[in-house]
Image (tube, rainbow, N blue to C red):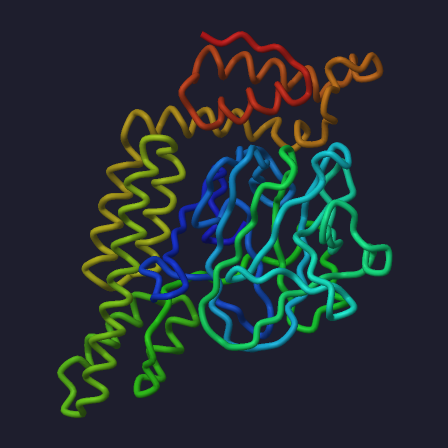
Length: 369
């Protein structure tokens, strides 16, 4: 997975409301494309985490997700979701962008959300609604959001049917026939939402290239400029970058109790992004300290054990343990062995929680202390 995705299964990100610059950043649309992992949501309330095809996935348990997206280009952004369901009772969710519903293929009907159609993770572009039954004329056609003005907007995914499981979201400008394949494209670069800095094109370019340390150094170099506009914009740029770094570091610290491996990787990544600055050096020191702590060491050991069976475990069908035809499936036996071992040896680790959750899905009863 890419640098901002955490292989341990948790991704740190956070956003503010669209009315103001987000301290911790946004997904930055590039060339008409936005790609977001489900676990990258800035707000995750009432969704459970589990294994997905592309990193981690989230299952609706009665809450909502929010993603902040910075759009440069306007137009029709066609929506695609990598999702799965078990039946028509758990195959959809509400989707809005800054409170506005999707558009159907006729340009007039406003579906309430999107639905999936597969028990395995698969890409879908299908509308849901309006109402309980999607009109036949639009039922099998792709849906889109209309972005009329550039700027930062919030994509909200709300609970419509518990059990709906989401792995990834793709928004593609004029992408009516751009259905992704496999795990889909890499996640969109994520960074600070910057103020207007047209007098500092190099800072803009460095932020766009995710070289945030170099961008901060460049902004600070112009703070004392004799040109008032340049100095003012340099101060604003530096403040935005420092706010982004500070918020991300704080959330890494908050994440540390539940997932020290993920938190350490987030902090290491933050150090890389802000390399060359005092902030970056501080994050690097923190990451080294966290990596050596007993809780992190234990979690890393558990992660390496779970990784040996995770891929095969993802391929097991729900309820496989109760299906006589799956009784001799080696993947099922390996999952049971690893889940039991982790529950006994590393019970308080994220890897153990993932193993137990997957075991429960396939119908295995694993004793826990």
